[in-house]
Length: 341
Image 1 (tube, rainbow, N blue to C red):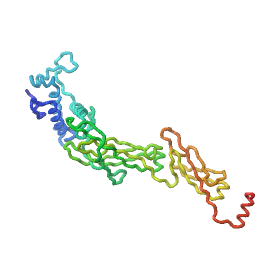
Image 2 (tube, rainbow, N blue to C red):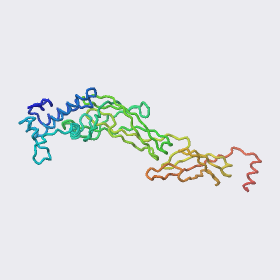
Image 3 (tube, one colour):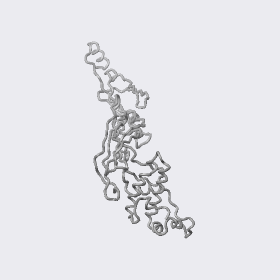
Image 4 (cartoon, helix red, strand yellow):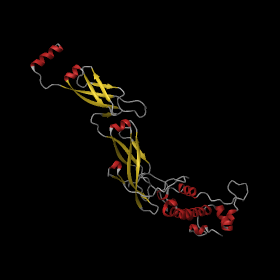
């Protein structure tokens, strides 16, 4: 019979379709070239042989011909698009394509995501750990809670659950939220290996903070949470938080500044000098008489408006007038003359 596909897949000649899938799943993961970097050439040959055996035995027509005529019988099969010519015979498909399609249709067993037909597919269960090291910190995050529903497990006998998202704050300065910034965040997490054991994996995630983002904005990285037996990995969510600023307070798209001035400036006029969040020197001349609680609005000097490109909020300056604690008789008389009282 030549090549013994049953022996290659380690199944008997009466093996069911489920038995074929189970054996192929185990052997394909064991001999995938990515799992055998120290002897890749041997693994590639073995992986190709295993996949070819599965491709034949999982197809009722090919299996029937193989059982009756052996490998030679397969060589006489016409290709799927042939009109009857038998010159080409059985031509095994690319092993990576068969492998990717198999796992795409068998509900993500052992932590595999839907890998499609990409030849550059890589195992997603290489390494792991617990969430930690965000932005250099050592705080750790766990995703042990279960919730929601997921796809069926191996053989369709169990269900994988997806836990709630794992959220962590991402503190940003007002300067970063004004101009935008790029943050590199190192995470570590638990990932389930094909043998069922947990291992540690680290990764650098890049977050592009957009100008004008507000506190509470969420950035989601799907399936970057911890893995565990019987559940899918949780989503990892970073939530924007604003650091306090020495000068500015944010109110929606506006910026608020409290400015203390003496009574003489409130009456005679003053100049407010501010450094903007993007580093410009802002000089504002005030000629109005400033009463306690007076507010000056400077248009387009607030925060960027995310949904309206090029538009900005306003800068609001609230004045706090400080009165002198005591006056001399001469000062009182001068003020009366000046104000006509």
